[in-house]
Length: 202
Ligand SMILES: N[C@@H](CCC(=O)N[C@@H](CS)C(=O)NCC(=O)O)C(=O)O
Image (tube, rainbow, N blue to C red):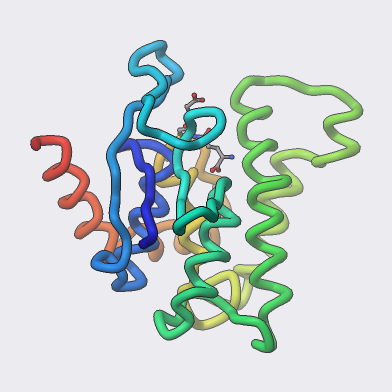
């Protein structure tokens, strides 16, 4: 059985949203855990098997998956019929994986460094900067509504997620703003928020 270790209003919320989008809520057991929050509240939860007590963390029997990009790849590969991934053999498999790894390896570090106002030539040489991330998104969205073309996919969900949380970080480019809005207007997002608030009230 698949189990997702989740903390409300955190990075694992995007995985909850993915599960909702994929229509696989009945295939995954969600366990709410506490995590150490950046404001000092919360704390590590003994029930969370993540080696650093972070979320999200997905287990499948003895196997486990950490990092959202990996969890997205794992679930979309496991449930290809949901249509949100690009399985092995699909002509967009490379683009799909590239966006997932770009998010994890470049985009999120750049967003955090920019938010923390940290600059260094070595960081720039490795990751470039926010302008480069914004151009990368703008180029992809120049003549198509979603990162992979006409259809929404799990990479749209993951790469738009930081802007749902940090609206102030939203780039000014109209194509990016329209894309973020399209991703935010998904019915699954409303359903996901309702589920999340129901869990919080329990
Ligand atoms: N790179 C990881 C980041 C996971 C992460 O940092 N999650 C935060 C919640 S937003 C967490 O669990 N923090 C608790 C801690 O640092 O102890 C991913 O994208 O999955």
